[in-house]
Length: 464
Ligand code: BGP
Image 1 (cartoon, rainbow, N blue to C red):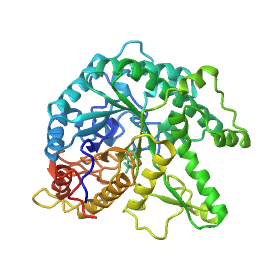
Image 2: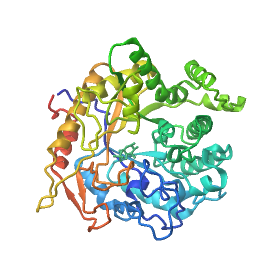
Image 3: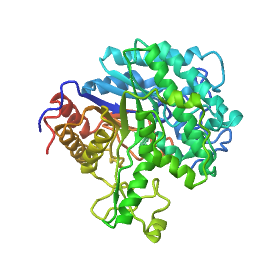
Image 4: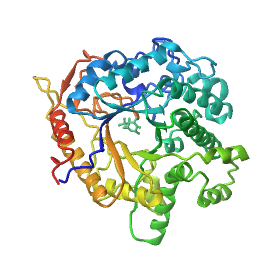
């Protein structure tokens, strides 16, 4: 393989609610993630005191971050994507003054990264918001949430302006369509109109955060974050191709607004055709003009789309309602593995926006077998990551501007969809199971040295 650009950032990505634990420490408030102990896809929001939640401790990154960051540094990471738990800074969301203990924690975390020359990339809201804002205000169903979010964003920009220069607004902002509680703090049975109204407010808040970031940290770069839901037509029937275009637009729409600063015509038509009346004020239109500097996205799989209602009905139930691709194999969790799709997606996003791209999540969730000496022979993970990175190299050759790659879960963590620890992504094994048993000890898997070599050779060791 040819080496990647010299400035290419290599690393991994985690999210506060999936690694930190310490869910009620140092003044942290309750978040939407805390009241969904079974994950994004089975959202129980009636958590009772005493109920077990795997994320309460997660992998205890809150206390063990120095050890974990030292391991990332040993692999040669130049970047770590983390998120700030909004509830550590504003426990209920509507306070006027931030919680100093929460800010102090992230100061320590960013200092630790600096010690190892690891560039932090920070997501403002990764699949969580203060539960207080949902309970008392109706989440993003309420305009006031924009004000609370802007206050939070300005607070962390001001505090960390000398430490963090890469920021992302909302994790997988398009997931709100599939998981409204996680995305916008709305009940699962909300109508499409309610969800799009809430999404609109979140898009405005995202744009206002871009504005604030540029004002407070002029040398920072602000990105969005999309779930890269690449869809292929199941056949070359024009109806399937048209349906696929619509399906891809259902998520590209978010990128269109965040990159171009206005709603695309196809979305306005969708609203008209479906009697969705989204209230958009003049000041909202003005706010949306604050567009992002780069695009970040997650990519795990691709899927197929068909206009055939029968096949569609069968597919309903998986996250994105996609139809399986007969040419691809799947992970143990049924996610279809498609490295070439990553090259296609990078090109698609580059052709559409001409903005730098950052792959901020990619990886294989698998069941690992721990050997007696603490290692894991995870050749399946190595081959998944190798094949995807080879395609990143191809896209760079195609002329796509790719800033970096942070694979998902460089250390085992709690999965988002079902809150499982047995779905492991890491180069580093964590001794903890789905019931919370285990010592939390860390050990290096085979993939640890493999990734170390990839980074040391700047991609040249990848096997095409
Ligand atoms: C993305 C989320 C992450 C992460 C990942 C893997 O949707 O941004 O938080 O968890 O998917 O999904 P899972 O954890 O369900 O395997």
